[in-house]
Image 1 (spheres, rainbow over the protein chains, first blue to last red):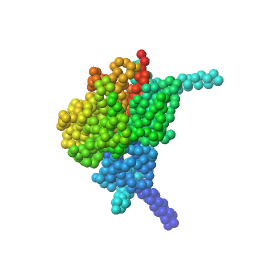
Image 2 (image 1 turned 90 degrees about the horizontal axis):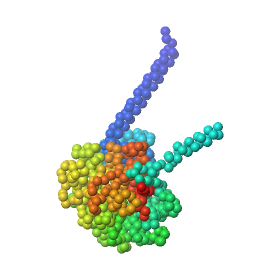
Image 3 (image 1 turned 90 degrees about the vertical axis):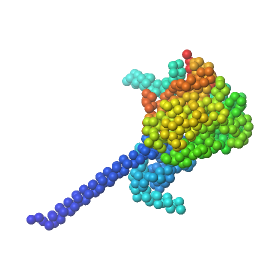
Image 4 (image 1 turned 45 degrees about the horizontal axis):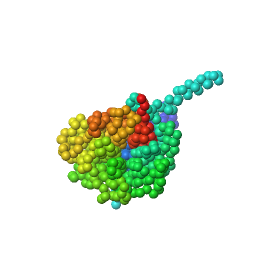
Length: 150
Length: 418
């Protein structure tokens, strides 16, 4: 005969363990998802970005700005980063006190999830620790940029 | 114990001295040549010019930490190292040239003239005379390098603000514009009168065209002709992966060195030079397929160098200090590539081009190497990792040559003794 009180305690224990396992699985899955995003982002980086921004994200002095350690890249303004990737960039604006002369081509064919992946790769590679960019963040950024245009 | 400490400190000194003062400032040179650091950390030094008394002027890409973009350096005690350094001017740029008692310097859109006194000091640092203004600066390829012929005409490069004159610059699949509208005001060498003030496009003459971007140019006084080194186009593989592999892009197109006569056309953007086929090939933006040969109306290079190494300055050697083979030959500095990625980068050296009877032989050799500062001359993956990137070249009155670096701003002095 099991004490009902005892039973409840056991059940609660099992419950806790189950919750913990679920949370753990979720975290693992999320990490695995992020890792997949980063791998995909790396592929996009290598085909579209590497030649100018270089394999170490260091850019080319006076020509192509660095991504590694750049304040804008690691900043909170995701919408701006999304806009640059989608529309390209050709303005004389200083980045961390330096000017860069080459124009960047637009990437009108890059889908929201691809933009999220390449931004995730850029913001979590080399010395960058700014973290993941999600597809919904990119969608929101594109809406914001569209609204700003009007 | 005391002896031990003494011994250790002596040993430490003996080991650390060569590290502190690297042999030949870290450069690798042919036998008999020596190099030392004439100056360091003056700010990214583009071109340099030297007066008859040996005063060095360096044009900086941007104002340095003192806020100056032209720096005057003098080695008053004659030990090979600049000991009097000062500067002025707020505008960044590349070109600088000493002609008699005048010092010419360029921003990215204008050329200014300063007067020198008998001590080679600038008389009017704040009030230069404007020789030319209004030259196109659309950021890409905006350096305005300058040189003179023997009749006081000034030659200035106006680089094309484009990679391959596509409708949309560096946009995969964008076609080349026909004819390329950029060539009316850029993508060539313009000639102006060195003594006339306030000139602009209408006062000058397009001397040579079809040159994407020239940073290094010099007048060969022995043959009385202009020579220029062009930066070839980028990104054949990224725009046309079906025509060019990464490995092919790393070798295409050649960086080209031309003898330019008035009216010459080097063919950009319609053709590029393929050094393995020894041919001008039609650019893919203009219907090329990596094999179709371009028109013979375009100029062939005097020398073809490996791709993407970025020639920054040309210096015809007229001195007597170096061995005879160098006389009237050309030194060319190479900044080092970026567009060979994902393959390792090349360049970061000064090359020598031998001349015979006033013509380039077509051969070339590395003269000074090691500027990148890697262990045992290892290849560099990314140009931002180079310790120094060779840029300006100038010859001193004693026949030594000087090489500037536009990263932190070192100036190397190279001498020869038997």
